[in-house]
Image (cartoon, rainbow, N blue to C red; front, side):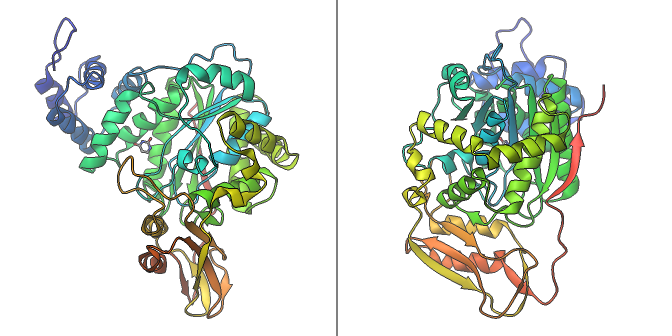
Length: 445
Ligand code: URA
């Protein structure tokens, strides 16, 4: 590192403090991240930093410093005086999680502005940007300089993380990804919040998943992550609340990009699966209460439900799709979404109750069909996927159709093999956990 600060950062003692579990000197993390962003840190030092944080954790003060440095490695949106509270939702991701698509327009219909900066799918989880691109023509590359005018006109932007938003996170995340250092609470917290805090939010709702389809499957670790996210956001003056929600079963009935857009459109029209609608209303209600549009989360949830039922959320989505180059006809004629026409069925091999033993296997099945990435930047088929025909715990007979596989003739056998591990029928019904298990508010004061 060639540091421009008066006293150069001594990397040996900086890393030595982290190794000993001590707090590094104030300002050291900030200078380290600045040097990372300017590509003045070699990979050995960056790898050591990430591994030490992964193994040793970070004190709350050091986590704040890391998050602040990552936010300020790039632009922060200037949204002062927008005239509407600015809110967003972040989910740690999972199988069939398409909540952002109906939720963001519903929040706008209820009076908020939503500058949603989302990611692409990697590993077993899907990404909002990829889902939106299943709408023909939809463009997700939005210049940060355009957010303000777009929010003034449409209330909503669906954009990606450009090189100007939290660039330090891109570098850190890419290194974590190839070194097996993703599942760390301080690293996930600073990574997620670096992008969300760059949106200059008033309120943030966090949907932290638990279960076999979650990044952190154990409820206890999910809860620790939820607390770290809420407390850190709050320390930056962003009102925040988290819910621990269920990823032991898929959310809704579809997995795969164009199928998930179709289901989101149904939700936006006041229909669709009840679990998707319930989570959209719950998280939306929390957001409205955080910024004072609703008196309570429950009242907020009713408002969100009204925006879905009266067509106002759908209209917002239609306008934003058009504004971002998408073909709005695809929202009423979903054959334009390009879902693969070949359909294979997977049937119950015995009578019994439906279980989901391993949700990640759905993600691997999608990968086999060509609908997910093995590496950053790969092209994927947005039209393949799986439609569930049954719910967790449902009683089925031998031969009952469990799911439909939309495919293009390749990868069907390996996808079927994965699906054998994703859905099963057993003599006893599963222990069903609630959809939303626990609410994690910010601590008082
Ligand atoms: N999503 C992010 O943006 N960052 C992480 O570290 C994990 C999930």
